[in-house]
Structure formats: structure tokens, C-alpha cells
Image 1 (tube, rainbow, N blue to C red):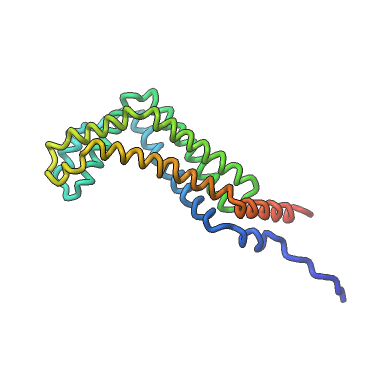
Image 2: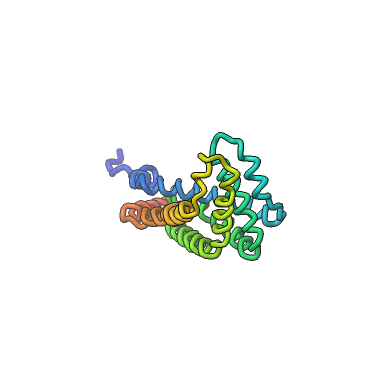
Length: 219
């Protein structure tokens, strides 16, 4: 009978998974959804810019005028005005849209690999987050004309709306909404994910996953 110590199970069977922080999973799931959303909206924007079918803002306001939900009215006017403004500076918005699609796809892949603890995924995810954050800042700086156009269009639609709906067309309010959206959703979520990836517990998890992968690969 062999009295030697039985071989231990490979670390990959249970070790790295126990080390995986919950906040890493939460932020990577969030960035995965952000990437999927960027893919879908980016593709639809590129298709619109390529076809050039501009929706009339007044027609959009009239079509949504009788709805019970005032936010649907604002959303319809917002979308029509935004698309019209984007088509007017297609030489800027089309390349930005293409870059969004590519970087959103990278974010989806990097988030999935990071959740799985794949070797090198942490570095790839950090690079994807940085690239998407830079693009978000560049897009925000270059598309001020688009924001101004749809906010002004929403404000001009006030006479066509009911008194209750007209309360939602204040220009200062929407400018602040856009600033908060950019700071909190466009940049804040990416920064939060980057913070989760740089925590010591996260680094330990990826190190354990790397060692587990190397152990499995050994003959």
C-alpha cells in the first residue's frame, strides 16, 4: 500500500473561483451590457447615417402629441432631432459611430473573459475600459452641436404640447441631464469597473487563475 500523500486537486477546480470578488462579477456584467447596448445603438446609428432617412421633427411631435405619457413625446422629438443633427455632421458622427461599434465589441469580449478569469483578461479589460472612456470623452466634445440641436428642438415643441407636457422642455434642465448622463453613465460606470479590476483581491484572483491554468497545462 502506498502511504504517500495523495495528490491535491488542481487549483482550478475550486481555488480561483472562491477568490473571485463579487464586485468584479457585478461590474463586468454591467460593462458587458454597456458593450451590447453600444453595439446595437452604434449599428443602428451607422445604418441611419448611411441611408440618410431624416425624420421630420414636427411630424414626430404631432404623432406623439396625443399620448398619455409625456416622456414618450419628449423621446420622439429627441430622437428625431438627434438623428437630424447627426446627419448634418455625418463626416464626424459616422467615424465616431464606427469606432463605438468596434470598441463596444471589444468591451463585450473583454468583460466576458474577465468574468471567466482567463489569463491576460484583466489587462485586456483595463485597455478596453480606457479606450471606451477616451472615445466617450471625444464623442461628448465633438457632438455638442447634436445635443444643442435636440434640446432646442424639444424646447420649440412646447406650444404643440399640453401644459403638463410642456413642463419637460426646459433647456437648462436637459443640458444638466446630458452632463449627468456623461459623467455618471458614460464615464462613471467605466471608472467603477476599472477600480474593481485594480483591487488587490481582484489581482489575487487573476494570479490564482493564471497559476491554475499553468498547472493544468503541465504534463
